[in-house]
Amino acid sequence: MASRGWWKTLTAVLLTAIMLFPVYWMVNVSLTNRGSIRKSQLLPFDFTLDHYRVVLRDQLPFLTTSLVVGIGTVILTLLIAAPAAYALAKLPVPGGRYLSFVLIVAQMIPAVVMAMGFYSIYNQIGILDTIPGLILADSTIAVPFAVMLFTAFIRGIPNELLGAAQVDGASSWRCFRSVVLPLSRNSSITVALFAFLWSWSDFLFASTLDRGGGAMRPITLGIYNYIGAQNQEWGPMMATAVVASIPTALLLILAQKYVSAGISAGAIKD
Amino acid sequence: MTNAAGAGAPLATTQPGGTGAVNPRKGGRHRTANWAAVAFVAPLVIYLVVFYAYPLIQNFALSLHRYDRATFVSGGAPFVGLGIYREVIAQPRFWRVVSQTATFTLVSISVQYVIGLALAVFFQRNFRLSAILRALFLVPWLLPVIVSGTTWQWMMNPDNGALNTLVGWFGAEPIWWLSAHNSLRSVIIANIWLGIPFNLVILYSGLQNIPRSLYEAAAIDGAGAWRQFRSITLPLLRPVTLITLLLGLVYTLKVVDIIWIMTTGTGTSQTLATWSYGLAFGKGTSGVIQYSEASAIGSLLLMVAVVFGFIYIAIQRRGEE
Image 1 (cartoon, one colour):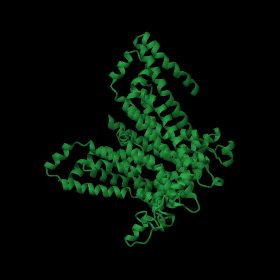
Image 2 (spheres, helix red, strand yellow):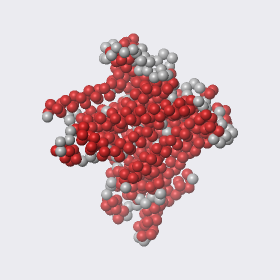
Image 3 (cartoon, one colour):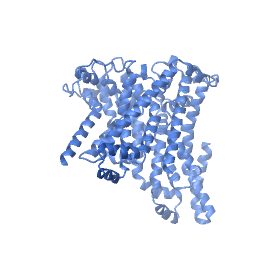
Image 4 (cartoon, chains in turn green, purple):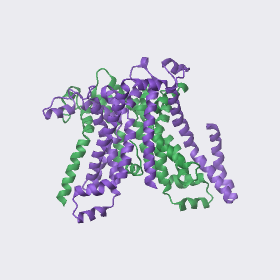
């Protein structure tokens, strides 16, 4: 029996290695000297950290922008989603069922359609290529998901806990602030992590609404710049890609329990 | 609209403390609760109107007027009704792109599903390191698409890419992965890789909900692993399968980033979504930008996505009842 278990583990390790090969290859190329990249060696024998020096020199403004946009998206998402979810879960909202329906449909709208609409509106009111404009657009990726995740969680809070607060004379606002919010700590972390990751990863809104943003462009466009270049520099490009993957890595290492919480709460997002 | 609701919000939040506590009549209480509820959802409703409904309407408006670069900035483009839609559909490439979109979507979701299910069954029984390895399988899903897209592009490089090195080990000729002819196949491969984690996660949690006792009873009756899979796992997993495939369909239809990053939608890899994106935002094409056509194609895509979205919601509602 024990030997069978080991056999399974071995197979699983092999499958994981195949699945993660592209990720390994990215790291491998990022550590290989320019002259040797085209040899496609399995290990970075011609080792160098030069590409990362290039990243630090060229990509810092883009990384900072992505960080700012990510934090802005998280704050906006939490501010809108948490109160609404409390109402949907515990208060008699007129047309609440209809609202949940709209949220599901909202997630299915092709991003390219949203981008066209935003582009036209932003062009008229003059917030193309600005960070607030990008934050607003990026938040649309996370808000419906956030409301649904919060609603599912808050619905599970026993009514006695909320009822007790109301007997004490607490208004719904105080009930929300002093009972619901503290209990929703884990859900808030899950929402924040996903909102940050999606805004950090966003390419579509960035490449349409913030194309001309200069240094105020996010890291996804920093990488994209390399693709268009005459002589594609694969080393710095892969090094930037590795750096851009840091939030994903941190998420998996530090917050894996929140990731699985997000998924098991019906966090369905592709 | 924004002002009215904004003024209503603080009023409503101060009210319950007053009327609710002083006047304990049932009717009054209910009404204040209602006011509070409206105040709590008001920001969301305003948000949905301003950041979903308005851009959607704007998109439709673009597709009903004939815009060019100049009128896009200055306004005053002529209204042409459904004229743009008719022109787009009449283009010879329209049906070719539709069929490429269908191939991209259907092949992607079916292969993702089969691999995802195989992995979910494999990971179903706990073994040493299974939790950690399962978590690592999420990586393609959580990585920024620009990262995976550029990496796949490099691996598919015809001269020095890792894939052609692999092909060479088997003695085959190098493949021109991203050529016009092969590009659809190549972006499908990359997209399958991106979608496996999503299928694995949903199907794995679906498998966890099948009672263990069913398998035990079947084993006592002498049913082998394959028999158990066919007569227990597959039938009981049907609702989850349906949901997974429908969601996959809706999400895959609208994919732009992985295709655009790898091929900019050239050759066979052009889909409705990348076509729309390219017409409006293609690199260095400000002279030939076609916002109206882009919006019309986007709107057609939206309608298809929403139809399947409604089917998904109907199935899910039926499952809950």
